[in-house]
Every structure is written in C-alpha cells, then in structure tokens.
Image (spheres, one colour):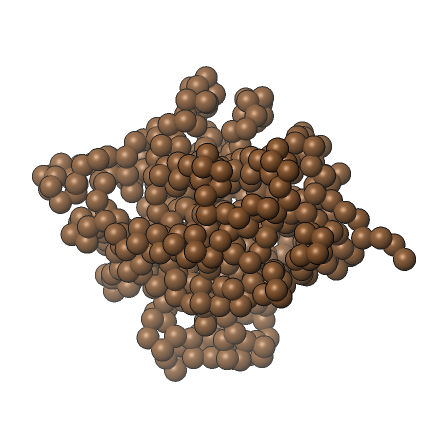
Length: 530
C-alpha cells in the first residue's frame, strides 16, 4: 500500500495567491504543493473568459511588486488589461519562477481533516491525497459561481452560459440573447454582445452605477515614469484606502461642504480621468448619506444625458447609495441602450417568472431567445472555502463553523481549524482593495508566521475563539460607520439564496495592515501557539 506523501504546506488554488505563496514558501525551504482544479494557472483569470473580461484596477498596479526585474520586464499593452493578457502574465510568472513543477493541475481538493494526534491535515483530492502540516486556502474571493435555479431552466432548448465558465466555442453572432444580471461582469460583456447579437434583452433587477474606464493603449511615457519609481508608487499605493490609486489621489474634502460648482467641477474632472479615481473625489462619499447622494446624482445626470429614451434612462438610474455595491467601470455601457437591438427588461418586481423552451417569461411576457447568459456573479468570499469539506478539531466542519456567517481572525485563521490559513478571506479588506496588494500582504504575513513557528520550535498555530469573535465584532463596527451595509450586495451575501446576511470584508486597508503587523510583533496575540 502506497504511503500518503508528507509535505509542509498544501495550497489550494493556483491563482495569483497560490503562485506567490508557492514562490515565497519554497524560498523558506518548505516543501509545498499547489492543487489546482483548472488546467493552468491564473485562477479567476483562467476561468472568466466572457466577452469583455477585464480588470478594473490599472495594469501597472494590478501586478506583483515582490520582484523588481519582473516589474521592469513585463509590458502591459492597455491601461486596464483584458483577461487574455492577465492570464499570459500569470503564466509568465509561473514559468519565470519555475512554479509549475509543484502544481498539480486538473485536480480538485475534496476535503481535509485535521488529525490532532500527528498535528497534520489529511488532505483528499480526486487524484490521491497528502499529509500536510499546514493548509492554505488560496481559493479566491470571486471563484465559486452563483447559478440561480430559475423555474424551467432545464427545459430551455437553447444554450445556457455562465460568465464564470465561458466556453471557447461561443459565437453569438445573429443570436437572440438574454443576459441575466447587470453587475460588473454584465456591464463589460453587454456592449460586445450587443455588437453581434440579432436581439439582446438585458434582464435587470437592480440598476448599477458605472463610470467610464477610459481604457486605451498604455501611454509609454506613463509606463516609463512608473517604472522609474515603481517602489515609490507601491509605497504610496499602500497608504491609499484600497491599496491603489495614489497617482490620482484621494481628496480629503467633504462633498457636502464644497461649493456646488466646485464639487461638480471636481467630479467632472475625475469622470474624464475615468476609473476608480472618481470615488476619490471626496472623503465622505461612503460615510455620509448626504454626500453620497450628491455624487450619486451626478452619475444619474450622466446616465440621463447619455441614454436617449427617457424611460430606459430612468430604469438605468440606481436609487441605492453609490459604492455600497462595487462600482463598475465600463466602455460604452449606457450608450449600448441606444442601439435598436438592445432592450432593457425590468425584473425588479416579481423577477423572472420562468424559463420556457423558447425564452424567458417576465411579468407574463415571453421574450423569445435562443441563448441565455447568466451574469449572476459568485458566492463571494466564503463559497469556494465552504465547498471543500474541511473538518477541524473535534470533527467540526467549516460549514457548521460558518453557518451563521464567517468567523475569521484577521481574515486569515479560523478557530478550531489549526494550521489552516485563508488567503484574503472574509474579515480582511480583500475585495475592497487591489487584490494583488492584499494577496502580497497576506502571503508575507503567513510566511513570517511559519518562520516564527520554526524558530520557536512550535508546530501548531490556531486562532482563539475569543479573538475571532472580537474581530468579527470589529469588522461589523467599522462597517457600521459606512454606507456599505445599506445595500443588498454580494459583500453581504445577498445575491445567494439562503446565505447569511453578514458584511464580510473590512473597510480600511492601511489600518488593517498595521494591525496584522502589530499582531505578529506581539508574538501573535489572539493566536494559540504550541
């Protein structure tokens, strides 16, 4: 009988988190294996191949900072990189640092059980198992697709596509298409689908705020300036609320206290810059309902000025606070609704009644389509972790531990799950930041923790229940000072039927990083080391 191979660390997922973690841990002399469901590296950028898939953080910032030669040698072609280019970058990183030899592709981790007698995780996959001292869930925050089960969906005679699992053989030319959802994915895909489809029906439950990305070829002068002081840019970015955007700055002024003409001028200036620079216009946008409404109304005025049909324009105007859901960046989204082949269908009332073999029924009206595109997002932050059968101390499952919402110290560790880390998990800033910056911070923290254990002859690190509960309270308290919890967003799990409504990410990136460092400097306060 073959003996289960023993390793120091097993990492679940070969996205950007898994790649950097493998590189970092290998440098520490820790035997590490990465297990990846897909056939290649890239994580979300491997799976999400829908039309228009693109990052909403600028390319020069949505990239690794840990290696200066890597920063200098890689050239991005656009201000905001598209999915194929980001995937090429992930492949380049994997090849440049010879990471593939320790990655097991086309392999799914099905479960992991903590064995207290040997202080190891016994990890099961669909292709064998490992015994690991540590397990790191680098499964990503937006990686578990949310696919609603609409009545009659199985009867549909055409093709059903989910944006997060887009096949390579899709051609929507001349098709009659229904897109379900108007989040960031849909806003990227809809303009491109509209260009080739015969008819496009956009089924909208909640209107979404979007600002122009102003994407285009990367200016060589901008690239040269950034690369001349990359370290400086990275340091300045890490002092920003989201870990990015220092080149355009965050204004400390109040929208409410600013003269109306000056306020509109600043918003207009940032609207022309494009991207998340718009949200940095005023410091109180996500804190003060009055300030938020002033900025939201500016965007609504832009929508009304862009969309020709007044009724369609009003349906596209959001009523919730701006940025309480993730704000979207677009290229021609609102202009798309001026096309004669594009139809906005309001499903905010009774929702989608049913799917028939030939179409979608809303409020008693059947829209005849031959293709349905589900742009329905993800079971964010917790979904990918909870889909693995993790069993911790005393037989406790992660599904039970998180049944009322995730309990996670620093967004990194779960009580009763020793030697388990969750990369950019709930309770950390993660999705409110440039994800690669958050990934780098977490990888460095985990690596330093493992070195600390080795240097102090410890074998186990575990979050205490008291510290984790206090951290959850802290996350809720910080969120309560903002307008984030005021929306039914995927930040709260509101897009997934039956999921507990808990605000999961932590606003406030720089303060969070300092707190994590304080914990490490204190000898890992809130953790039990043995």
